[in-house]
Amino acid sequence: MDIRRLGATGPKVSAIGLGCMGMSDFYGPADRAESIATIHAALDAGITLLDTGDFYGMGHNELLIREALAGRSRDNLQISVKFGALRDRRYGFNGIDCRPAAIKNFAAYSLVRLGVDAIDIYRPARLDPNVPIEETIGAMADLVKAGDIKHIGLSEVGSETIRRAHAVHPIADLQIEYSLISRGIENDILATCRDLGIAITAYGVLSRGLISGHWSKASGPQDFRVLSPRFQAGNVDANLALLEPLRAVAADLGVTVAQMAIAWVATQGQDIVPLVGARRRERLTEALGALNVKLSPAHLATLDKAFPLGVAKGERYAPEQIAHLDSEKRVHA
Image (cartoon, rainbow, N blue to C red; front, top):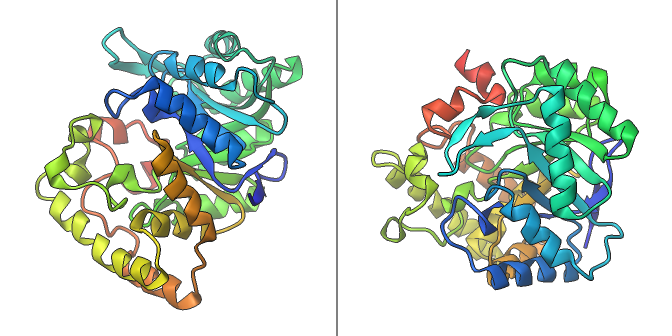
């Protein structure tokens, strides 16, 4: 397993990380035993970065990870936790809370659920519009001093917020969506992170299955994707058509479409770590195969031409969610 560093001040992690969200939430029922087996398979394959959120399944995901890690070595293993999302008993969302007192409360609960002495990377899930980022990061810096967290990350914020946060405390990485059909960070966010020595942990590398080669209109969606503009009528057919050039390059290399899409993200820089949301071992095995895909300059040129910035039809999220993405302000100002 190749190793990459999360920014100038962050930890070393595997070149691909495992996103555990789908094992508890958003994609319908998951098999608990298979989820744990998938985490074990990831660790055995050399994956050292597990990504979660304290609101995934209302704490279920953190407890699942704790169960999966029982009896396993924590040496060189990094757990990344997002916090701040407020939810109700029906799993609805009620906003973001990044007040200092709330942050310290969230962290305490996560430490207990995970059964660890410190959270390796801690990050607000979204920017709280009611709390200056300086206050949020200041509270997190207090947690670093206390030994409760080791590194500070960010999620889905824009360049101005990144710079303001980094001025308070070094930021290890920015977690943000990045794929062949979601290349918005190339406008300015990626350059900002590189200027400051901040890594990218890229989620949505398969665009929620849209460019995985496994999803079709006949199969759904039967989950949160029903709210995604890219899966809705008027957009989905055009987006699925984007698979054709991807299939052509994948066929030329003798790999799967998913492996091709993951490999493209991994090839964009040593400071970028793709997160794959595999819920089953077979999907994990496929994703790991992406690490062996070698893209030539000709392949990259073909993909760049086929997937220019803004090629996808529809926004990444529904309008009410886009409104809360600080990372999209440069587009929707």
